[in-house]
Image (cartoon, rainbow, N blue to C red; front, side):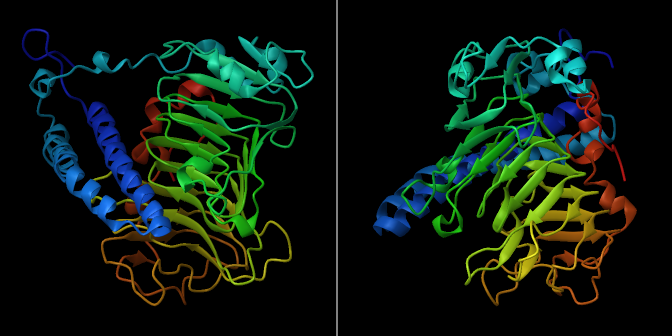
Length: 431
């Protein structure tokens, strides 16, 4: 497409999707800030601080929400009708955001290869036995140049690395691979009961864009009695998780924000063990609830969409939902709506007989969630897929059309057709 005016560029649908993603993430950040203060308030009973911060944030919260509405409703409609939009009217160009070429040819070879160690030489190697440049993952991450426009490849040899790893928002384009999800394991035990806020309990957390993880396991060993204990938290836009495992109990995988893709991963947990407010697609994954504490029930998902215009939700497609082991006796549900616009779709997946026939449960017991949520099932199979006795909420759809389900595919929901092909990770673009 051509330019508009001197030095101008069209604001394409792709760029509008980017803007919606980033503004959606800003709202998520604000919600998380208030949520963390609420956790603190519950502990210290100091509601005055919470009220003061909420009032101080009101203007910025409304500004971001209004900006998102403009992008989603007005600019989105103009793009749909192919009406050119001059980006300078909005005050920035895409190049201002440091958006590099996402995956190089060498990265593609690495992801394609059956044997990681012979595919492409990693720039950095981590090994507990001292055979690499680093003995801890954190040390290798610290050596990554900030805002790297090129891919930095870290190979983590087999072993259990007991550490809490954080890739901050300036750590871009990192690929980290191991020797298998049961061989290369990152392990931590931070948890809510012992005093760590849920957000900070993550064994591994990544914020910088373009993160790829392959053939690694991430675990939080705190156990069910410690309540919230996150194994992995991702806020990385254009992130891919391939043949990885995420193992914990409550709040195992925090798909926090931005666009994320999970393929052939194993995910285990109890309460809300896939949660957050990213735009996340899970394909061909094994999703495995496990036995919680005796007074608890399981919820596989808890999606946190709080604004109607956020481009977020959880899409579980062509996955297998089955218990981790045979001793699962606790009532188990597909999920519960965390926020007013929670969005979750389970489609073309095999659901085992473990599932409570209601399928879903409320966030507040015996209180029907608002009609603004969107929960749906589409073309699932298995003994747990029968929707005849599901909840009757206004916001739940026991079946949807192919067109509706298509909105939650890789191509439409996370714009994966634009960035996933370069990774050579197998994915299904549509239904």
